[in-house]
Image (cartoon, rainbow, N blue to C red):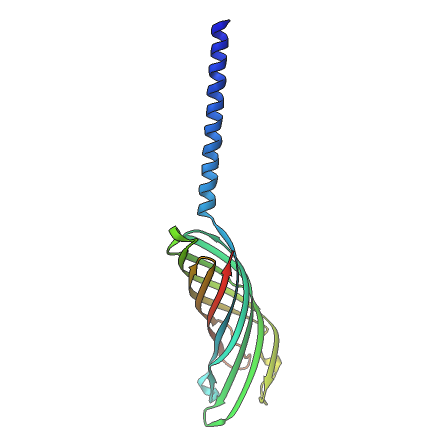
Amino acid sequence: MKHTTTYLTFFMILFCGLSNMAFAQNGDIQEKKERKARSSFKISAGVNFNGLNLDTKTQTTSDLTIGYNLGLSYKRGRFFYYEIGARLNNRPYDFTDAFDSSDTFSFKTTAIDVPVSLGVNLTSFADRLVGVRVFVSGIPSFTTSKSVENIDDITTDNLEDFIFYGQLGVGVDIAFFFVELGYNYGFDDMINTVNSNPNQGYLNLGFRF
């Protein structure tokens, strides 16, 4: 009986020890998974530089214009990551007659962009301190408002309500701050009566948390 009690005590201690080890290992595995799949929310604001790739037959040139954007997004991943967000994008466009520089006109659109991005964090080992990222995105863009000035043959009905953009960009993260520089190209025409693919460069500043 004495030996039986000793054996039972031994196995109970062994069982408890193994259970603690199992729980510790599960905790370590879970912690590693969390480290590998970090997530963050981001808010940003920035300036954008807009133009149209116009058909040369239009005899009109597109001038570089400056707009703004405001955005928020959710990012998840460590080395490889994905990001999805929403962005208010203000895009003004100015034009000049190729034969008369005094003849100018313009229009403006405001849109909600929904960028869906895949990226690589080149410095994922130091992600919470400093990071350098590159990313590519697909952006459905839904026009919410549009206005036209000094144009006789183009109305707001000629401006498309939906455009799909492709995006390439690079980002730098420093602690809770980030800077992103990128380029967007529209695969659809902005004006439905002429070849007019929009393009946009942008510079954004923001916070991540």
